[in-house]
Image (tube, rainbow, N blue to C red; front, side, top):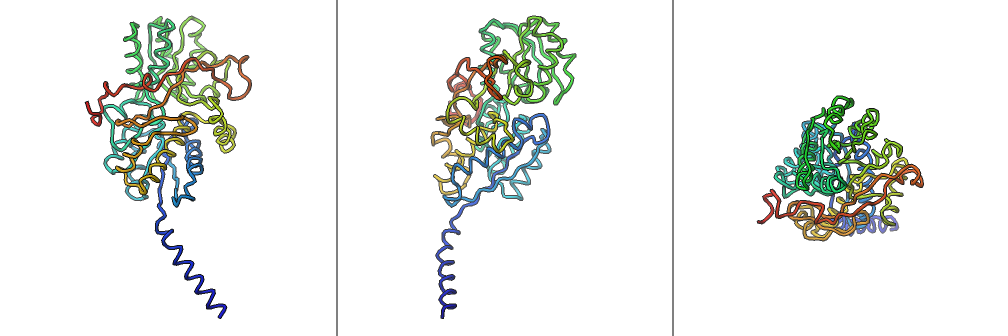
Length: 401
């Protein structure tokens, strides 16, 4: 009798548990980025760590949500990224692709996501075209873009007297967009663009390009590049005595990881624009400490912070809609205010642009730093409406005129 009673109880328990299991929703997240090249430090495995922290903080398992995270290396190549995205969407059941640095890859993923009716939350790419002429009802652009970088760094340097520019531009979609948006800020303020050179992507030797910039006599050498390209450009500019000769370097996209690699002795005085810094407030410090313990002591880049915040907002929308239908979830993401410990309160606009404040920082002198990763002092804050392109100027077809 005892055995029968035990079997009956087990069967009853299984029946009672069945509805809960049947209601459990599975979501598969794909983190697609550079895991081996010049952007791996600012994205890479750190973005996967950030995604895991978002799932943990959302308490997905307690809410009946099974979240699986997969990752892959797109090698900064649109064809490689496109192949991975199609396989993820068509065969592997991925619902959302996160991160995707390298604008040429991001623009390709943006289109594929629309075709497959999935969701893309981009944190890594910079091109403002993602919410402009290439905007999609399936994409949210979270962390920053070339328009905001131009308004921040470009605008500040022109105001400080840097009214003539020469650009070193990474020869792909990101570099072109960053040069375009910064040149517009410079000329609108009455400055002049004296010239530009397109540099191979990725690059290692910038000597001939820096010599052209030096010969131009421009007050500002605008670095329309990122990651390893920026690090190499700044190091080689130092070797040629460009800053010592009176020209200023405009690092139009500089990450804290780049400053860490350069060291304060080399990077001091750089003016840069970011949407996140680990030492902004108590919440950013607490989260960044958790992240650092999982990331070998490294502090997070703004891209990695954006992966966390973007995924957190997506999971809230899934919970609110009780499903993962892309149209319903995207509508909810745009309807609900955003609120997270890293970017604070914000919103997602009709064009997919995530709205939050941006910060203008100056890199500290070695004597000003209190220790590792204490690199920035805040110069100014740009309100979201100042930082990002107004909807009235948008080329996005989703925006009602």
